[in-house]
Image (cartoon, rainbow, N blue to C red; front, side, top):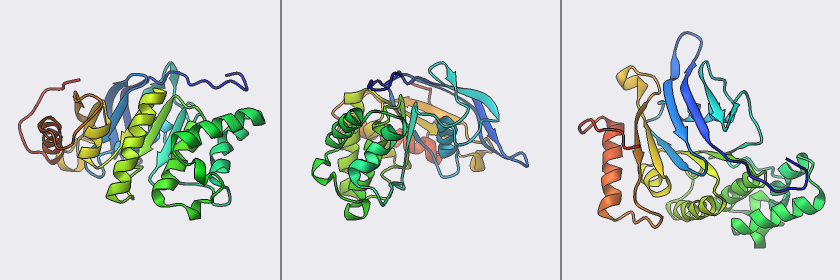
Amino acid sequence: MRIGTIQRHAGMIDIQNVGKQYSGGTYAVKNVDLHIDSGEFVAIVGPSGCGKSTLLRMIAGFESVTEGKILVETTEVSGPGPDRGVVFQDYGLFPWLTVEENIAYGPKEAGYPRSQVKKLVGKYIDLVGLKLFARKFPHELSGGMQQRVAIARVLANTPAVMLMDEPFGALDALTREQLQNQLSKIQKELGITVLFVTHSIEEAVYLADRVVVMADGAANGVAGNIKKVETIELGENRDSTSVEFNVYRREISELIHGAGHEVRDHA
């Protein structure tokens, strides 16, 4: 990408028969196949220890794949890269930098000219609604505001893919709902690919185009595989009190907890 040009590349993810085996033979993830189209919002749910965060970390390049391969567009993942941005539950902001300085950090490190950095910061600080807090430090912000800064900091690097590991898990219910709405609008506006790990079934159904349900390896002896991929056909304006919404929520809950009859993949 030419310095000075704002450009976000396509973010297709192709996970091909991926496994992660630790020393001693224990698998965290095994035989995972999943294709995510560019611009798609996919959520991963499942019980603790099922391998969902491990899978996300392998896509991010933080952990190596021991079987199979992961492609972002046509490039095989072999480590972290600027095409993938990661948002964790822990905001990870630099406490000595202001909001705008935190957001500017990545573009500055990438060598963008000052005018371009200013343009990027202005765009994404507006997008997350923090223009009035641009010169505040992280400790002066609420948890929800800090997570908005973390999201803006990732977006300012113009990644093809945003990987999110329980980003709203530590927030109160009202703040969590506000950030869900904001994230949904941002994702649709930018067309960025999002892979979102969560323990909340309702959050997954509310946000995602598809929900990936991962199996509990400890319970069934099959390590970290995909039990089902559910396509969510609710449209953009989702009502969590609707009958249709709760049908999805109940079916996914039954899959996670091992209840109900076996169902076909809708994807």
